[in-house]
Length: 339
Image (cartoon, rainbow, N blue to C red; front, side, top):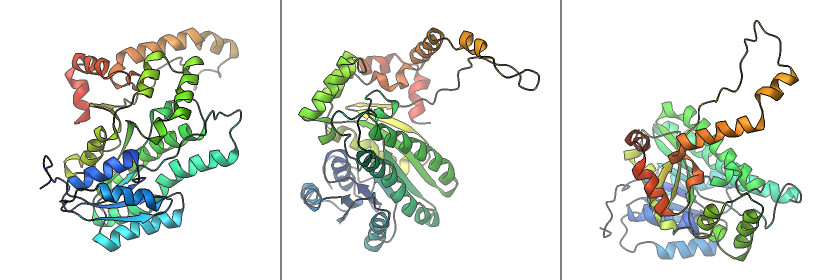
């Protein structure tokens, strides 16, 4: 046995896209340490070979690789077929493949080709693998899909295709969780905070500094963005969600960084104004000017942020602050992770 590991994934066959580096690589290694058979995937063979070399020598499962971009629908199908050919069935699909937004990218200057590539990799790539894997999981009566998103979907980092691709991934995953639950398939999302090639380097540091100067990121978020924890801290959450212990957990968006794990709270609608459409005429412009005043909307938003602060990703700052918040939170809020 690998020291310190429980082999909770022994006999599980799991695909990990984007596993040549960063989070995907850390996830693949953790899965192998826990006993899973793993299919690595990335666009470059060199990175896959590097990941293979990092696999535990005394692992009990097998590790194979399939090179190519999952943004290609046919190749995504071949990747899933590779898992079936090597191991006979597919228990888990973990999508970690991703690319960075071009330096300084915004709606004012991004090339349409860059936009399309970002959407192709982040959203289409996730759809492609899910589309091929889900029918096979349905036939088996079980399966786990874990997709990777980002706090960027909330727009706090500006940009275009990266944020849109991650937002689309969240919506797609929630919809899949509803469609596939009756077939024994759970679908979840993780928004990780970790040190990777996308969150390091001079270009990235310049981007974060620029966002801070423009007022899009406050000082705390800037500091957290510039000092992300190692990806080995988020990898166990992926492994847990792929295990039988998490088979009842579906349709959740998690966020994780370092030793902290949180859950995005899907806020209920906040009533701003109401009239019975069966007995009242449509809204008049002056009514909306009065009822939807900017300051009033801001007050409502601030109130929601306070009430739901433990589940709000804007609290992804220093670990000490997060732990203080978690320790002060009502027990029932923290138990949502289990329920």
